[in-house]
Image 1 (cartoon, rainbow, N blue to C red):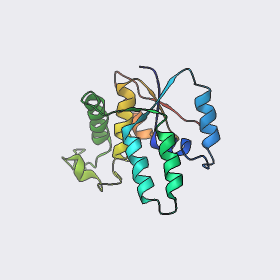
Image 2: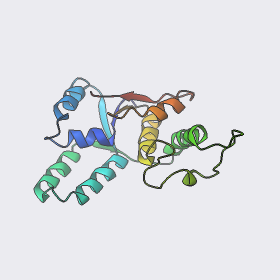
Image 3: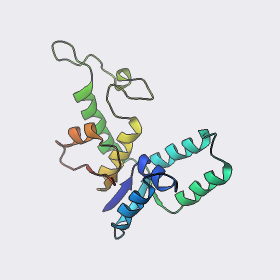
Length: 168
């Protein structure tokens, strides 16, 4: 499959007509109109969560966003996503987990590395790893304004490629 997978920051920009980068992202996608554009269900979940906790957003605005959401094709996480996810997650763990003075891993479990919601030690949020894994799985270019530097670093040694594009 060829095309583009939109990261959460891309879809939140795309679906918010008042976002300062909305036109820039729309133009970026228009230039690639011959390619398929997908949205991860992970990003969909993050956006839906944001809508539910946004007290300043009225119901009509929320419904407008949901209407725009329905115009896109969504990629599910499935058993085939596991391979690329586990490759990325384990490479991040091996490279960025704390080490003893002898160079041995101090932690044995990924859950010991970070606060559960921020992934501070790994420097990558868990949902970003899942979305990047989907991009790898389907050979899609991930569209994000996040550099995903650590994911790019660890994926450089893989036999498959992780491709990233910024609309800015």
